[in-house]
Image 1 (tube, one colour):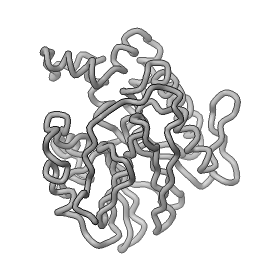
Image 2 (image 1 turned 90 degrees about the vertical axis):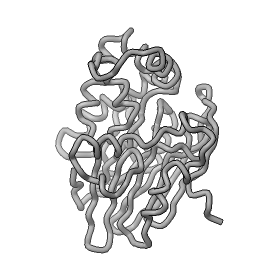
Image 3 (image 1 turned 180 degrees about the vertical axis):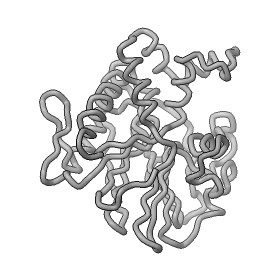
Image 4 (image 1 turned 135 degrees about the vertical axis):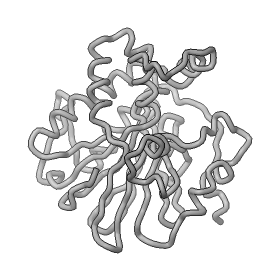
Length: 278
């Protein structure tokens, strides 16, 4: 989907149920909530739009996941009544949870998929217990898009996807390209291989220009950039930061807020992207 050029975009990395951090980060960008948790449009943000870069669910505790889904759902319909102020990129967690709760026939139920559901996709059990929340999630899922494209001019553009992928897949609409933009090779299944070895295209295809590719998916301790490739998933649910990229005309800025410890942080094995940089 092509993004209008008359707006500034606040692109937020993987939320994973970190609703408190999401509200704090939005407030830093002048998106304030009223007593009903609805974001108010004002003179400071009327020309800004929020883009969630996928994976707003899973990994957090159930109460935070419920609050996150309801917050995004309510604000999606509230903010987009007259002008588009909230977009959602499809992440692999939204995609898999949707497949589980709709009994997707292509999802084979095996001991592994059952274990994966319990380990990685805890939103499934929450939605199965709460039909109203399930309906809201499904509506949000159908509003998600696999990619967004901001083409400011011949020298500056930004492509947004959840996961990094080969350039040949960027902004394509075929089934394979969509799947690659949603999820890259799993590091959970390859824990002994560094990210730079596992997905070498991310640095091998990087270029010294201003046609950027911004993605999340690969939780990092800091925003990681190599040339025109930028990862903004900074491990909020693992006790790190929730970060955003701010696209303002032909500039990209960054901002972050720390984990607020209002739920238990998760744990994971760190593997730095672009770790060859010194």
